[in-house]
Amino acid sequence: MSSRNIGASLLSRRAWRAVARSMQKRSRMLIVSLLVLTSCMTILGINPFSQHAKAQASPRVTVAAIDPSLVAGRGAQLGIVQQEAENATTNGTILPFDTSAYTLSGEASGRQAVQLTPGQYVAFTLTQRANAVTIRYAIPDAPISGGIDAPLTVSVDHNGRENTHPQTITLTSKYSWLYNQYPFTNDPNAGLLHPDWWITECSCVPAFTTPPPTITKPFRPMHFYDEQRLHLHNTYQAGDVVRLTVPADSNAAWTVIDLVDFQEIAGPAPQPEDSVSVTDFGADPSGIRDSADAFDLAIQAAKASGKTVYIPAGTFQVNRHIIVDDVAVEGAGSWWSIVKGHQVTLTSPAPDRSVHTDVGFYGKYAADGGSHNVHLSNFAIE
View 1 (cartoon, helix red, strand yellow):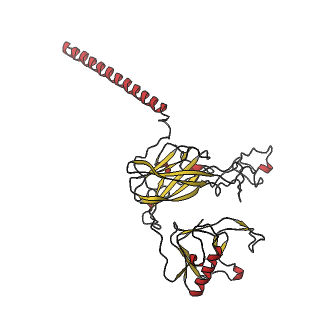
View 2 (cartoon, rainbow, N blue to C red):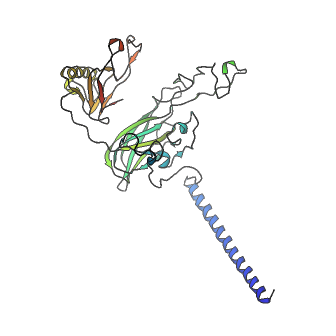
View 3 (cartoon, rainbow, N blue to C red):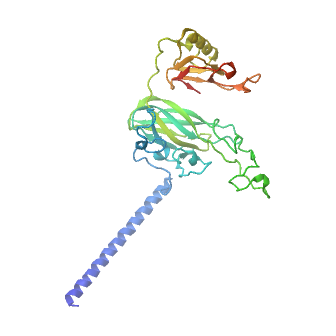
């Protein structure tokens, strides 16, 4: 090798060594910077390697957890925009994807959801105008069944101001949480309803297995989710942020949010022509007094005159069945006309052997000829 080539080779080696030293120095600086950043995040209570503190890069609209383009042109147009909680901004915990039975993720629409503890939130960026929300959620059952009630605060980040117009709603688990084998039970501490059935948990028939298997209680919890809706104070615009926050003093150890439906609802529909209003017969739209008898009178008058029964905007307390036949009952809208009641124990069993009654519109018994030509629309039963 010539002296010139040797010199060039040495120069090349020296250059590469300089480059290598520079790269090593920069790598060390990058590692140190990352360590400092990680330490700062840890001090602030943020785990950079967890699924906490997830930010919503851009709002993502779904239909039953899938892309809307996959169902375009199919089904009814409900005017609802749906967002999954796992795609939103949260400082809670995103439950991992899981299709297993008897899990909160397994029953969630996208097989994921967000779990919040007191003080935590999940926030959704609106993609269009909205003045109403419907929230699919789960909260714990009571230790001995029966459910609990727990608060959730709904507020809006609007015009650069955070948490404006907060509204607190009550969530409940009184109508969720089933356990055990068919036909199921509300008791989380119940033993097997059918110990003579084969079960996957032990791959055996417990009643005929020695030694008997240990069955963990509660056995097969399910039916976790319920829904609650709220009419917001104002109509908000695309870009505003709807924030769901679990109050710091909430009695629920955790609150899981699966999804939220957003919509813009119109005002109450006016009374149609050729109709009679239940308020004309004494129904109370404040919900203080029982209005069952007034509903019966309105239905009788409507049938006699061939008119429609109108339920105006309001909340009407009805604590028994309303029997309908050959009549139309129409409300001012499902967000405006609400019929609600509570369970009442009967002094003697009804013909269908039920021992209690509750709010509802029912046809006549088949033995009495049944009901025909019944139309119910534009009101909600709670």
